Amino acid sequence: MAFSLKAEARKDVTKSDIKQLRLKGRVPAVVYGKKVAATVITVDQKELTALLQRNPHAIIDLDLPDGGGRQPVMINEIQRNPLNLQLLHIDFHQINMDEPVKTVVSLDFVGEAEGAKEGGILQIQMHELEIRCLPSQIPSSIKVDITGVGLGENMLVNQISVPAGIEVKSDANDLILTVLAPQKETEEPQAANNEERIGEAETSNEAATAGQPV
Image (cartoon, rainbow, N blue to C red):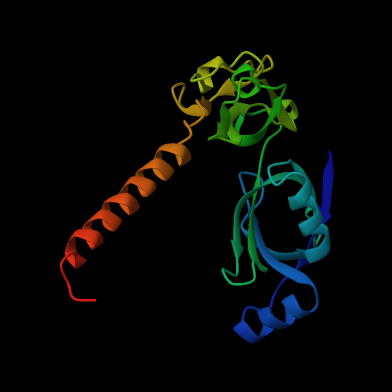
């Protein structure tokens, strides 16, 4: 396993108890699956934060309390405080290593699009891809070569090459990126229009003041 976490038992369930756990640097969690009855636990906040920063979709070797042993799990849900993004609760789903799972992986864009070299604007619309495969086959990321994307062209999901054994679950026609043509300069015509309007205003003022006593 690439990542491991040690869980501790959690028996206190009042709001005050949970608040104290968070103050001590523990994140309330629950783990469940075919081989694990739903169990309330806590994990270390610093270790969990480091794991999420590296790969939030990784397989985790979770060391369960009370003789539960080590189980492969994946994060199913993360709850955060919407104001400060503090970790509030984690759901771990126990998985079987010999059964395919659905997850998402990051897209790693390599190369420079031909259209961008010609002055186009590269806009990336998708940063993750949904896949299905055996847990041992989940890649840390999937490389996407964008060098062949020209000016005004798009790249769709069905144009990505993935390793053998991986089934893409994202819609084949979903847009990954596009290279937009550069916008034409509009400052000079706008300036000319402004000068024309100023000239018209001056002519109008001169006509309005003609014949008035000095």
